[in-house]
Image 1: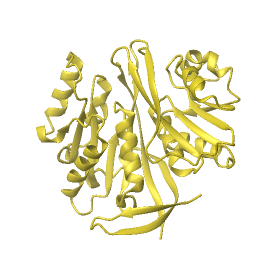
Image 2: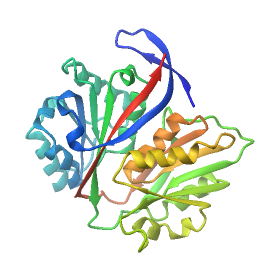
Image 3: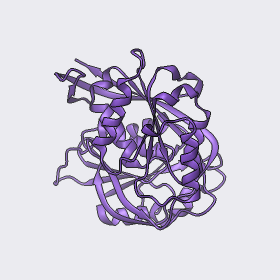
Image 4: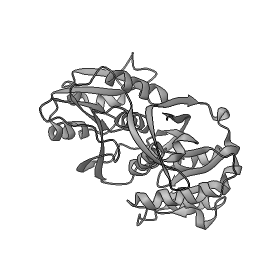
Length: 329
């Protein structure tokens, strides 16, 4: 499927291209050409894993780094330690707190890209501890910008270990991810694709709001999933009894979840599809990309509030994905 896209080039003129698809392939860390990174984007937060990838990537990225901070967040010991870690290698003017101002975030990225060397054609985003609003906004911007024809987006993810249960989550609002709003036909039924994640009760609450006719549940596949229930299944046991289809996808890969979601959506052309991402982040990316590619799919962004900050330590397992927009004149 293809859709018309108007792209603004660096000189301000426009050209019309057609987007066939978004290619997302897994990469090993040593397969990424790090000297050609024009901008490397990280998030500084309360999770110890927020510095995991930064600590193991080449220091040549420091000049092109952008560290996003949480505006107004209480400065606890872990947040202070994370900021101090980044500050050892990154200048103070490379820190930025975008809040919900997506345009300011993109402008900041463009300033760093502008000072990169001429052959730098990669933009790196560490999504490990980054809020969905930020990394999904970067992905949508990349898809529609002129950089989609000249650059590649490299996504990085550090798996997490959770020393304590997930905090309680209050869902305030459901919004479509900007740029992923599919064509909606009120006369047709709704199918919900929900990657259930690790939030107990969240999937049930969303089902009550959407009221889909059919549910496709995407479940995190673990190495031992054949022998025992994964944590995702245990926490969402009641919701999964309502699912019409269950799909198991790995979380330490970018390409496999995306390919799996695309295979689910490919034969669907006469119903409304709502993609509901609850985690983990690699699955969130897959569902958001589906909303960018399939005209009947809409990806949902959850506005929610947690009872306390997340605590996630790095598991030592990482994955990288290379996103490329396939365009033709």
